[in-house]
Length: 202
Image 1 (cartoon, rainbow, N blue to C red):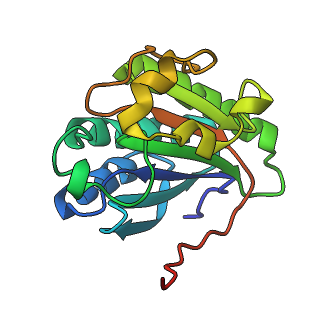
Image 2 (cartoon, rainbow, N blue to C red):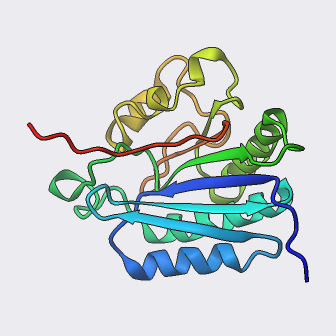
């Protein structure tokens, strides 16, 4: 049996890096979607964050896998709890249980424009299915001011209500009020990226 061509990948980040049970559930949910290959899971307890990289030939499978992951994240992660806020908060900025969902073209045939369309479909599905506010960023953003992910994340979950209520801060899909425990999600499209987290002495 041949492996289907992987044209796109999603590098989804959830705000959970400590509970092995939740991470196992999340991985199983992604892997249960036909046509999806889960390539990597990276978890960090200090950041309280995990990254799931999964690939597929097209958007239908990727949207289904993202919804499956989102259901686990929303049901299992409470950003308002002491374990996720105050002294228990991870050091990585976050606005949501399913925090960020970048769609990335990874084959010569796949384009950034196609990735952006997959991102928009996934964003609408997350809002409709789980009542999550969803912000588009990167190549999927509705305007230049909203392309930057750090801008959308500024203030984190704790300031999300004020951020979304401000002029120009409304999500692209879903309610204007954040989900009480799962916050909001940023969904976008970008090219391949290499990133490092480096701790500097002093």
